[in-house]
Each structure stands twice: as C-alpha cells, then as structure tokens.
Image: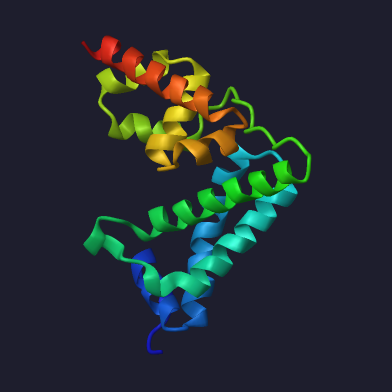
Length: 183
C-alpha cells in the first residue's frame, strides 16, 4: 500500500483497513481508541468489560471494514465504529446477565460536564438545548441511547439495566416533555 496513513481521514483509513492495510488499522486505532474508551466508560464502570468491548470492536472493524458504506450512505467512520462498540457493549451486558450477575450500571453523572454534552450544546440551538437540560437524567439517558447512539429499545434496556417497558415509557415521557418545552 502506498503512502503513510497518518494524513488520511477516518473513512479513508477504514477503506484501507478493508484492503488489509495493517498500518491504516493501527492509525485508526491510535486515533479512535482513546475517544471510544471514554464513551464506553461513561456507560459502563467495569474496566474489564470496557477492555473486552474495545478489543471485540476493533476485531469486528478489522473483519468487517469492507462492509462500511461510508458517507455515500449518510454515515461516518466514527459513527460506524461507535455503533459497533455500542452493540458489543449491549452484548457484554447480556452475557453478564445470562451468567446470573446483574449488568453493570452506567457510570454515574459527574459534576463535570461530559464532552459529548458540550458538543451537543454547540450543535443544538439554545431552545432545544434548554429543553433537553430540563429533562430528568433518566429521560436524557434513554434519549441519548436511542437517538444519539441509535440503539433499539431492547439494546437500550440492556445498556441501562431497566426493563424494555420502562425504556418505552421514558422515551415517550421525554418526547412529551420536549414537545411541551418547545411549544
């Protein structure tokens, strides 16, 4: 493969990984693993699960890079990577639950605002951002998982450790509260 992968964007790196370029894979890992680790830790406090999910995610990336549709399908390489990691995290919670242990709960909210929340504030208008901030934390968690992370009700249920019915109820309550706040 010609050229160093350092100057390429993440989508180009994934395309090169699909062709078996190990240096591109190493560069993709170097760029994205710190960010991905932080996002996983915000959703799971068990370092062992985070490490396993991270390993499984990059193994899946190596194996399935050829299936990445890219911006032509409206996606991004980083979004694709997160969707793989989120599903792997849900799978890890399911495995843990299957072995008669309760799933690890999402990391508690810290007094320091997460970078994700600050980025959302920059993207969302003040009106929407203010409406989101008025939601109860459990409603924001459901919205974050289902809307931002693109998880299904079942996956959100496993991720948050609550029944599917509770996820549906919280999603409905969040939509109603947002609608009222924005009207």
